[in-house]
Image (cartoon, rainbow, N blue to C red; front, top):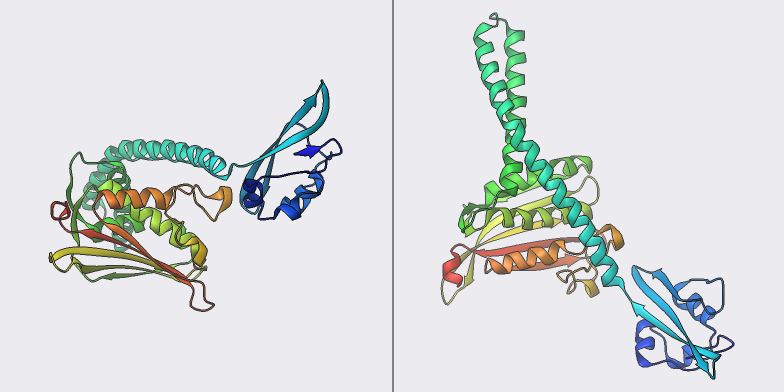
Length: 329
């Protein structure tokens, strides 16, 4: 409640929780002073008219002022403050996801369209090999051309396989799938000068949906890349695990570790929540939430270890999947 002079007379408990201030700290302040203290926001007028949006420390608020009339004379106002951070992040996530979906469809179309020309070029290079004079230089040029065409063809197949989904669960070789994910994120790895250490400790085959699992590991890898310091290392490990010793149920653990800044302790239980992000509007907050849902649909689980200690910081995310989904069901 705000009087005609713009001074706050009373506030409810929700307001104190929202601002992290007590009743005593809020009541008696002018609206302008409250906004300055709580948000470092300096409005042009003492009681801002109508609706205003404010951002502060990765949070977003909508402030609304409703006038109070007695006998057609305005005697004060009601100040309403709402935390709309999730709403803002949801809008951003929807926009980003729409763009990603459009980009994915375009990449799929391009990869599909270039397959036939690539096959023709490969055949022509093979025929040209027999037509070129027996010179070491010409042969080396042809070999280099064939290698580059083969590389483009391999990237095309990876893009197509990334977006192609099977109708039923199939046997998925996780080491092959992770190689595809690493190849598709190779540019980001090169740009940040990151080393990838592979530790394939198991012949990892699980029953699942390949495109969904690619999405899971691509999300996790991208997070590791973004968190990593330039020139550092990312470790990707595959190992055998026993999910439930009593049932002797076998599983596979895939772990992605970075040597980045780590996740603050107070944020670790939130990272799988929808729309939670530490990147403000640069992140959507849906990647790990979606990954967690996919892993649970495969009857698996995700584990997190993280440290923010200087010289020992970093994060490890492990995905544990049963080898046979039917066993887990």
